[in-house]
Image: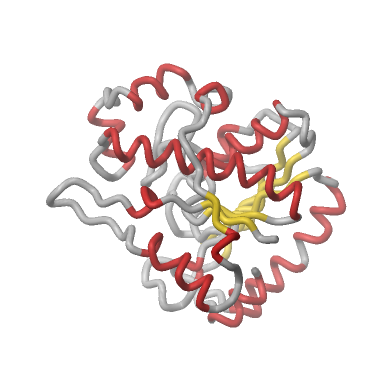
Length: 255
């Protein structure tokens, strides 16, 4: 059975006067049900997690400043939206969705978190609408529970997973692979264990060729116990900020 983390707080609105596209978090479950990908019983509702798993990845001072909405204004601006207690609660619940999703994936073979993939969060700071790195926390959770030793993170978002790369930069137990737009955000890239920078304008053939010539060998080489997969349809030609030219069929071939 496919298990999917979803919580009503995922679509929580920002303070009055601010706009951010959170409507998709309400539409995604409806679309998954409509197309028959899952059934209502597939969804589970995450909660506030035990903070010990968060501070196993994130600097405690940063995390508690986040909890108390005491992030310095210069650092808060990098996150991209005004911080509130509700938004921090939302981020913590996203983390729990990924941690619980890890256990469901081990039980059923696959699980997903509709609002996961906060890969721009560093050890000690947030960036680009990401405050806590849910997949990094999930990886540490699996290792702490002795559910996995070697982990592979496959990040195919059009933006490099810079926070994830920084968190695991000196850790051979977690292999980070990011395939992203060469000239897209972040403009200063971190070093993943493997980075593939995709040229602007690349379409289905070029993108899929790069991926298929890389991923099977990488999995065979690393032999991970667990794989995180971060996807993003911002590789579509219709995404004006993505700078790539993939079609919907090309995305389906990837995913």
